[in-house]
Amino acid sequence: MKKLWGGRFSKQPEEWVDEFGASISFDQQLASQDLKGSLAHAKMLYECNIIDESAYKNIKNGLLALVQEEKAGKLSYSVKYEDIHLNLEKLLTDKIGPDGGKLHTARSRNDQVATDFHLFVKEESLHIIDHIEELQKSLLNLAEEHVETIIPGYTHLQRAQPVSFAHHLLAYFWMLERDKERMQDSLKRTDIMPLGAGALAGTTFDINRNITMNELGFSNKYLNSLDAVSDRDFAIECCSNASMIMMHLSRFCEELILWSSEEFGFIEISDSFTTGSSMMPQKKNPDMAELIRGKSGRVYGSLMSLLTLMKGLPLAYNKDMQEDKEPVFDTVKTVKGCLSIMTGMMNEIKMNADKMNKAVHQDFSNATELADYLAKKGIPFREAHELVGQMVLHCIHKDCYLLDISLEEYQEWCPLVENDLFVALSPKTAVERRNSEGGTGFDAVLKQIDAAKSKMYVSKN
Ligand code: ARG
Image 1 (cartoon, rainbow, N blue to C red):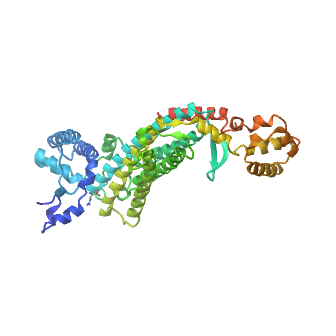
Image 2 (image 1 turned 180 degrees about the vertical axis):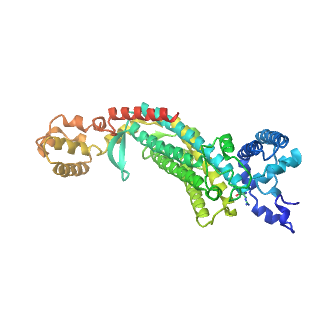
Image 3 (image 1 turned 135 degrees about the vertical axis):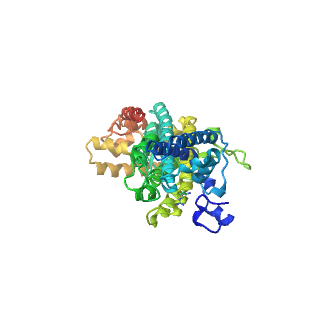
């Protein structure tokens, strides 16, 4: 079989070598973008008088028919035609005859593939943003229900100070908000059209790149043909943003896994997102959360693949760059999947209020309250800190907590203590009072919820 580029060759490549070089097994995912790009290119060729009306109509109708067949999953590709670009050109030519061969005028597969890939990453970045928003909505709903639910806050995974559960959830809301902003920002650098760059140097045909740019909905076009066909920074940025999302989801999952353990018992993950054990009948494993945590590895891996792939390539196109697609395809699929599962999991999560309440009462996370109380009575904070440390040690020896010590005993230890100490030491008071901006106090959290809601509203525009 003669290659579409076979003119210069006297010997046919062997089938097994062809197979090694082909990308059709994966780049068929770019079929819709490729057809869109070709429709725009054909229109531009016609409007610039590079092809005549009858050829244009023929090409356009052929491409539109392929669009329908592609949507219906009726196109079949062959490894003989290497990649999606040559496969579609072959299918078009089979359909409409020699006019099909005019479509590739003033175009190279190099600007063609770059254009398809930009369109793909652009569409997928928008889908990822939508998925992030769904998860944010779910977190916001949950936060609104749990402003006054108190859990231990940790540092070093040691109980530190009690916090509102809503506050904890909102921390992830803001991380996701920045993830969304990062995607929106990199979209600006993805929304640039390479088409018209030719193989690397532009073209002698009198093309008009504004026509294709508008037709394809790009906001900008590359102003250097070498740059246009050579860089994949937009794809790398997408994978980098995706890695950040996965890092955030992975941390969150780690917490869900811990919280759903017997040891914590703060939450129960719905049956739909857990699995049983084939041997141990009592088990309910947080598989989905674990998988999300695990999948962060492959997304980071994709980012590393792309960075490594690109680092030594001389300008302009090199066949190495065919390896750019699978990591990106895998990344967007993984990130969207993880965000959806996370949203589903959060929508059905159950809190164990009793366990949370017990946890904040049976610990020393109110020790700072005691130190603050003494400081407010005039004892220098450093001294108060030392005194409270001794009191905590005393409690540990007595096997009790700060709220179990009587007023008399406190007064022997420090005469400044009065009855109001016990209110100050309750976890609820500890949380309620931390109303500094961005703090965990109930009023501060309500303000935060308002701010979060306004972000959601703004991003819809
Ligand atoms: N399949 C190729 C890729 O994905 C398309 C571009 C091929 N260009 C070339 N000059 N061989 O990168």
